Image 1: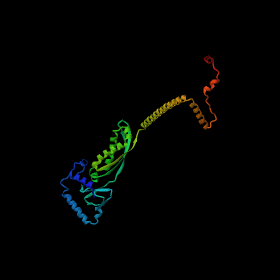
Image 2: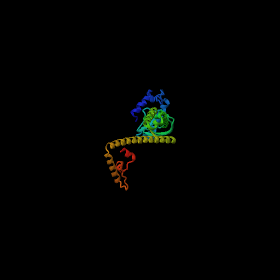
Image 3: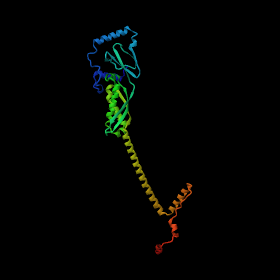
Image 4: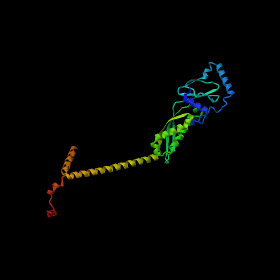
Length: 298
């Protein structure tokens, strides 16, 4: 049986509603004169034929659709009132009725890679994934010849149009925003077809090889520049620390001897065979013969 939403949309089509999504497409009320006497005679003849061949005619009249399917019935080429049938059992008149099953499950498809020229004149190849479902089987059958193929073509075109307004940096960093923009645009465009676009995801962005090398070289140069700046800052901090240490040692001569002993302790812990002992010049001053200039000074 048809849902309340499908019945309401079908009533809007019959009454010529001004809803933008139903303004174009099939309108069941285009022929105000009705089916006519010929259609009435054919319908009566078909029912008599069903009664005459009962119960054999049940094999051709009784149809079943699954829980996730709906059946749109046309009688003598006209959309049957009442909306789509299903799920479950429904009846048709074999001679004058035709029907088409519509799957309501979510369908996903890959958008083929599109060669796109970005706003900053960079050529990239982008592909995406689109998820959609049919929300109104009656409109999907009557308003568009092939809603699945039309949605695929529209997705490829929308991908090119949306990414053509972005530069390369935005394409690489704002995928979620681009996906949301595409989803809104596709959903608005497919609403007159009875199709609901649920999700759009950007899969991959492929750059030319030369551009990849240029970006890698740029990134490497930026990292080297940051490393040099960090090393220079470290040298500056180390020189300031050495200056402060020299000032402390100058104020306390015993600090130099303590530093010397600490250095010896560190060297001896490594089991070295050779140890260099620094000897202060002040100790050797008494053993050096004074020069003539020093004697005159004395």
